[in-house]
Amino acid sequence: MTKMPFDSRPSSILPEEAVVVVSRCMVHPSVGSAMGDLKLTASDLPMLSCHYIQKGNLFHRFPNPPIPSSHSLLSLIRLGLSRALAYFPPLAGRLITDHKGHVYITCNDAGAELLHARADNMSVADILLPKHVPKSVNKLFALDRTVSYEGHFKPILAVQVTELSDGVFIGCSVNHAVMDGTSFWNFFNTFADVCRDGVRRVSSVPDFSRESVLISPAILKLPDGGPTVSFNQNESLKERIFSFSRESILQIKDKVNVTQYGNGSVDAVEILGKLGNDPYYYASSGKLGNGAVSKREGNFETERQISSFQSLCALLWRSITRARRLLPNKTTTLRMAVNVRHRLEPKLEMSYFGNAIQSVPVQAAAGDVLSRGLRWCAERLNEGVAAHGDGAVRRLLEDWKREPRCFPLGNPDGASITVGSSPRFPMYENDFGWGRPMAVRSGRANKFDGKISAFPGREGDGSVDLEVVLAPDTMEAVECDVEFMQYVSPC
Ligand SMILES: *[C@@H]1O[C@H](CO)[C@@H](O)[C@H](O)[C@H]1NC(C)=O
Ligand SMILES: *[C@@H]1O[C@H](CO)[C@@H](O)[C@H](O)[C@H]1NC(C)=O
Ligand SMILES: *[C@@H]1O[C@H](CO)[C@@H](O)[C@H](O)[C@H]1NC(C)=O
Ligand SMILES: *[C@@H]1O[C@H](CO)[C@@H](O)[C@H](O)[C@H]1NC(C)=O
Ligand SMILES: *[C@@H]1O[C@H](CO)[C@@H](O)[C@H](O)[C@H]1NC(C)=O
Image 1 (cartoon, rainbow, N blue to C red):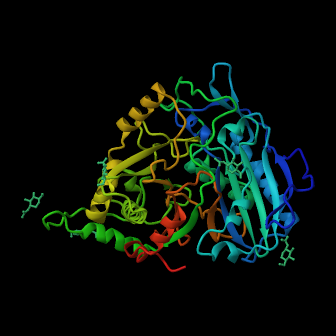
Image 2 (cartoon, protein in one colour):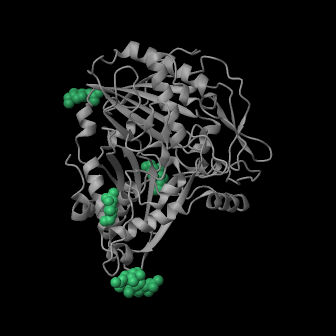
Image 3 (cartoon, rainbow, N blue to C red):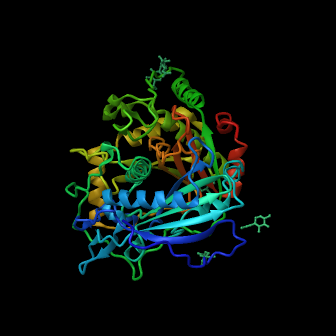
């Protein structure tokens, strides 16, 4: 149960700001935690220099049943959060570093923060309709620009509930050294389930084991006061969500399939309706996140086929490379975040709590990306991901253990693209009691020129939304790129 009532400290945000925090409180697990310290692994530690993950859902105020009014809404969320924390004790804890330099999550029930904010002048349409994501969306998340190392003295989790004129936004900010996207959505789904029903789904029980090859005795040396992010946070950026319908995705996949190869022979690569680098079976709903794939696809062998998501990434790679007007001999890099839970042998549970991700870079000269066609680019991506089996995962881990370092996010050479998140994450399976969300939005955490986040489309039929962050002139050029824009759904 929560041990502290909401206080009504005056907010530090000026009244003319669109989003005003009206109260904040610490929420503690409904049942005291009995869990011991959890050691950060070789996949967690590098994230200490990254911002907290910030993702949330937008709800319309008047669905059926309607969202309760302020007081009941906040009571419901506070109680639900307290119960959800009982299932995820690390999220109510803090980071600690021992005298040797090993970092742990201590499940001390210090609490997660809950903020109540009002944005009386902001509507659902103000968030959804502008062509570019408005800056005001950044204000829908707590712990803005907080580096994960700060989890030593700040909450691991902060939930901000913002009441808009005609809706509600629920934004979660979670320490990235504590969990990756797979764990994040497992928590968020549990939080919603518990708010709605008081109980969670059986399938979402997190696996807190720390017995895999991810555990390492290596010590990550950090500067005094902790690390900072590895990219310039003040760069001017444009952000836009490009939606691709199921039909568009099938067309892109078809194009990849039939593009002529070399002397004209058509290489009959079988392409299934597979959507990601990340087979993720949701036992809870009895179907995969995008509803389009069979359980059999969890089989690693199917990665030999170019997926529709890889085809979509290839399209983006070409378009951004064209827009950046790079010299033909300039090396471009497309990095994809891959889930390693199913790549390791023995496999980790999909419910494994923590980070189990690696970055797979694929490189090609800008001239090749542009002249060799969509199919060629998609094949490069497919080869890169398919080669990332148990052996490659272990090699990267060994490299890190020899030379521990923070995760280098960013685009230092001006020719990089980083694709994160996944269209397979169950981002719309968050029903707090008033139906499916209208949309998914993220805060400004870990954004730089060339950062792409893939979300499932709201329809859940295999459609995909790409959240694309670019330098303003690059965005403008992508928006005029016919090869790319012909597949994008009209706003
Ligand atoms: C909302 O907008 C009205 C009219 O534009 C303005 O008078 C008022 O101060 C605004 N309120 C907030 C909280 O921004
Ligand atoms: C970025 O902006 C913030 C706030 O305006 C400022 O404190 C910081 O020094 C700036 N950093 C860089 C690298 O320019
Ligand atoms: C077409 O190219 C492939 C691969 O380069 C080659 O194996 C094949 O013999 C060529 N076919 C013809 C008809 O030239
Ligand atoms: C891919 O192309 C081959 C050969 O043209 C064709 O037989 C197959 O049906 C195509 N697959 C898809 C999914 O379009
Ligand atoms: C790339 O091409 C440019 C212009 O042709 C040339 O000046 C440069 O040296 C080349 N760079 C490399 C690494 O080959």
